[in-house]
Image (cartoon, rainbow, N blue to C red; front, side, top):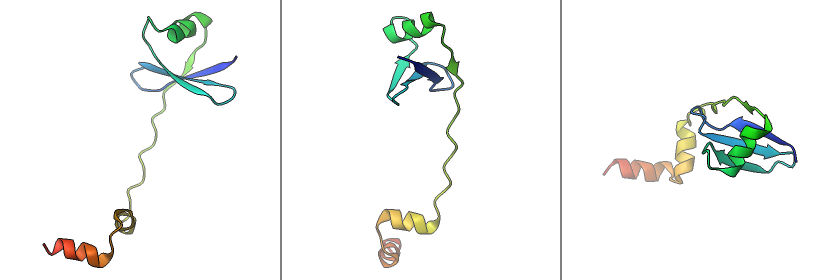
Amino acid sequence: MTYTYTWSNAEQTTLKREDENGNVAFIPTDPGNRDYIEFCNCGATAADYVASPEPEPLTAEEKLNASGLTVEELRGLLDL
């Protein structure tokens, strides 16, 4: 089985292992972990960690829609 490895965090405490079928496992960099030992002994390298981009902030309309409130309901809450 062929695996690709990627660091899953900037601290390099966890590896993401993916096989050719898209199955994913997260492996802690614990010297007692058999999957981590296998990684260290197989000569593979891990791709660098890349942080996910920050999501775009929601617009006022998106926030209102996500709340499930109508404009009238929201106004009623603000008048408390």
